[in-house]
Image (cartoon, rainbow, N blue to C red; front, side):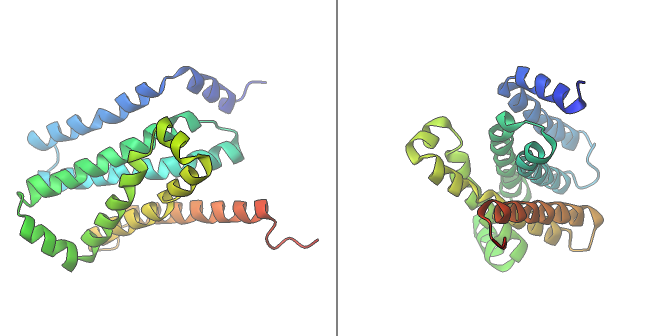
Length: 208
């Protein structure tokens, strides 16, 4: 009997990855249009900046879910993981660009001061810098040159990046809100799941 997972897997095999890139690009001009036409409230720049950052965090979380979804649910979306990862970086770049160009109006001296004095900005910048080598090596040429083992080791940076990203998101709110805490809980859960799975694979804690 065909299950929902089987149906999704068959459909996913037919969808080219460029479609994912295209679909994930659409919200960017849409949010800018909303900001320009009053659709993001009385503080459109702050709202736009937040939307881009939160969308990036959502994509990072979705990317982290792909491997456990295949392992535990049989849902195979691995072909889209690179596209999701690259687009998460694109959204972070847009998020940063809004802060630099629209929020801070290219006041580089003040920006540099804020990076050092405001912990949530410092954390966000560390996460951004950590994402750069992942974005640069998200291609088959880098995979061949680095070798699969080294490439996978580098891309494990996704996990600390996710933690830094959600901490940045929580600190930006300045008050305890439910939504950022949900992201934090999901990321911690995914990290715990990965750690447990790794322990089982290496046989740590298993008595002979």
